[in-house]
Length: 165
Length: 167
Image (cartoon, rainbow over all chains, first blue to last red; front, side, top):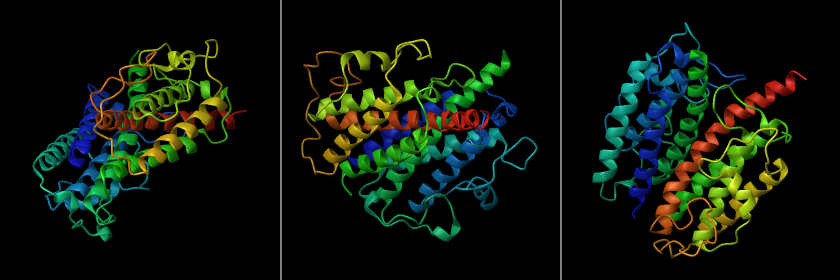
């Protein structure tokens, strides 16, 4: 098993958990808020998508989010609440699908690409783009980061299901 | 960066998030329940510790959990409630530290036996010990599994903070 296989296994697990957590949820249900200061599903999806965009940028691939979309979901960005300007949940779901497909394709076909230096610029503030010294480090840091945010979706799904009762 | 360093980075992130989530909480706060069918913090911590102990078993490093403890926190186990048997919160926090130290210490010791087969002699079920073909596959699958459960702790930490504010 190579490094890229480790990343592919975890990324695939993340994608499956994520899609399971949002399956059948409406746009409005993605703004529900648990007690305290946690983020809603909309913010988490945008955050994951923007950090995946950062991996694509550093890998020399095309990214998908507009700069204003990326900043809306950057680390430390403001919470998203109903009525706030935000990316539509249908577009976020599409971004989650397409970034996953591109990253998996790249991982399956890369030949020592993980050893290369990231090509992004940290000034653009796209996830961890331009932050790490190698792509391997970027992937390790961000896939771990992403998994934790995927886990945050589970209690939000339970909240949505509970509200339907 | 080699393969073990990838796991070390992710475990270190997880451990940082776990210790942040449990900081200052009591056993009772570890049993607080979010809306719906989510698990409480006690169950999530016990589940993480159980699966880490399974990884320790497969790599041949000291394990820390008894059969009685692991039986409460395996996959599909019953929810932990204030009225059900559970492991004390302080012991669960201690287990996070012990199992992390065991795994992180092994991962940063430049181990060469990542491809070895997993154990076939487990005396009782403990996480995924003995399930995957190789140690490295076990680590890859369970590192991702752990991180997702670590993410579930964030909302439970927020719930505990709200509960403390209301007292």
